[in-house]
Length: 133
Image 1 (cartoon, one colour):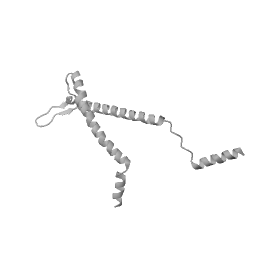
Image 2 (spheres, rainbow, N blue to C red):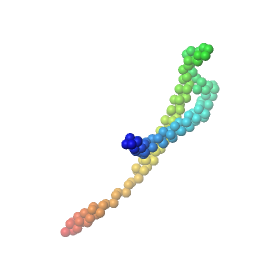
Image 3 (cartoon, one colour):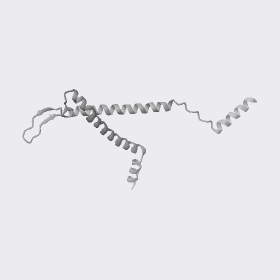
Image 4 (cartoon, one colour):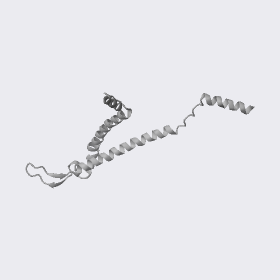
């Protein structure tokens, strides 16, 4: 049972749970960005280049023969994926930049110095009394 309790302790650590939440949110964010790129961004770009759909761009290395499928290099899909990556990376950059700005504002606030402990107060009083004598 030691291994099971060790696994439970590992799985319930804050870092693991935070990472799992981040992965789930990241996957959902990736789908949103993919939809944005495919459904909003790419149609106007395709229209500008003559109505070409990027996902259909490919170089045929070998034509289809009978039931054998054609051999193609689908560079349009690559362009689509690269554009997805650039947009996701930029969006994450903006989020991290915003978070860093908020952290910096928190750090800039001057922290109130901690109050001296009882021992320090007592020692200061003794020092002051000794100075008077």
